[in-house]
Length: 445
View 1 (tube, rainbow, N blue to C red):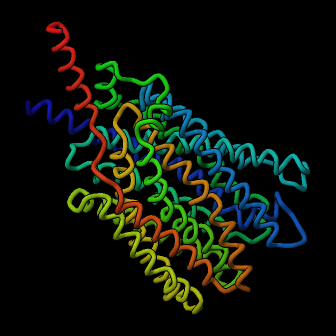
View 2: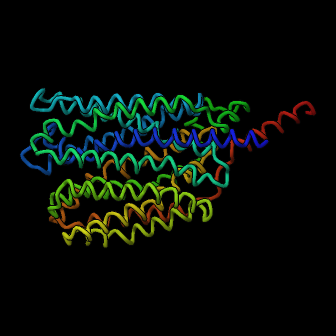
């Protein structure tokens, strides 16, 4: 028994490590685009007389990635629930890697005209499809391998991939931003995209060594795999789907306001050097590496809906003070306004989120369920947030208070949604036991 436990423990560590590294690569690729969109793509791929229009066009392609994510979530969720989690993660990593490197090699509008933004859009869609299938599989590998009383903690560890990916993306961009502006705009920004090919090879090597999750194997053994998991999900879990999307609202809004939009706001309106703004976001992301698992572990004690609801309330309370700190122009106060809300308080929601969503569905439809909830809601929660924030900022003549109000609204919606969530869905082991019991009773009938 001891040997089995040790082997199980080693396998869990291997699976969690593979999930973290793969998620880091995927989020790095995805966020690198978001960071560069408002400072490079608006000029090189969407030139316009009005700089606000250029930024909005660049952010529109950023949003398209979020529109594509539910497509990826449904495709890979479907086959992940029918064929297994591991194989889908190999495919998504390849899609994401190829698309990102291709963006780094893409000629500009000045070089190939209208073909440049069209190709950029296609590659962004490919990124969205890749990350749409990646997230669900990565967190499920950790969630379904973990002991039941530690699922919040272990499922939060792949969530660190978001923080590490953002840290890498903003850090790399900050480093190449130190180049003279002409060199940065001509070739410097491309380094981060092309260099991701190294990370893809490392992630692929590690992922090929992990095995399928025990819970999915139980579903297969019980012959409970669904012909069309999406239909089963819609029929059996409509309430959980709606509540999950409501919970997701503040995650997408807060992240994109503080990690993406804040860089443009600080650089263009507060006149903070772009490199400085990027380093502040990098610092907040680094802090999140530690706070995400901390709150994931806390959710195993407090309960995931309760932890998330409290986190949402705190994000509502901090929105206006954070933007006031930004508006002071004082670097220490701006750092405080980014690192504490984003690096600490945001993690109280994002840390427990993977296990919270996984609790909403049983293993027959879990890959499809969590991917749909996370990615479909991401269209309005994440994808259009920079566009909304840019519009609200322009509407407020450069004053950020309407943006802060939007953050508060999203936080309250998520808080109420989390409070309405009930007990978790049944585990695959429960389904297998019921199936075995039914089979045992069959001869007597």
